[in-house]
Length: 177
Image (cartoon, rainbow, N blue to C red; front, top):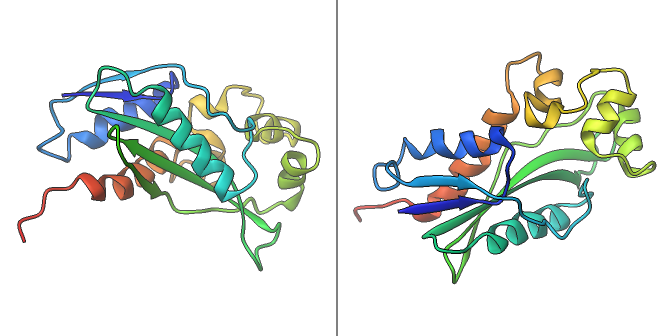
């Protein structure tokens, strides 16, 4: 079995490799990451746009494989939150016919100013956390991610990505009913 991932980000690809070990029917799959255009902005600003990005990434790498996985993180509007937005990771698994979606938990920056950097200045999350002074690491999205900074390492980008993968993999789970 072969599974293509629509990303060269090693955090995302490793999350897929690791999570598949929990699924006996997928554990031996060969997993490979590929560059894939999300066809959305660098910082998606709605749940719909984030889902579209994950689906596009999966569909773009569905070549010579059994499944293709697209992962996209983005903001979504959440009423009554401090900034009006929370970040969520979307996983889209494409089997050539259908998309199977899953989401991670959603979280919010405690400082609404960081969200304004993304929504009003057009920065992506990595750029926003650097500009806000939370890190000097311009490649934070390929490492612990902003969620790693906000949770002081209690949840990192890989674990956050695994949450979305687990909920999408429900659709591929084998059940004895």
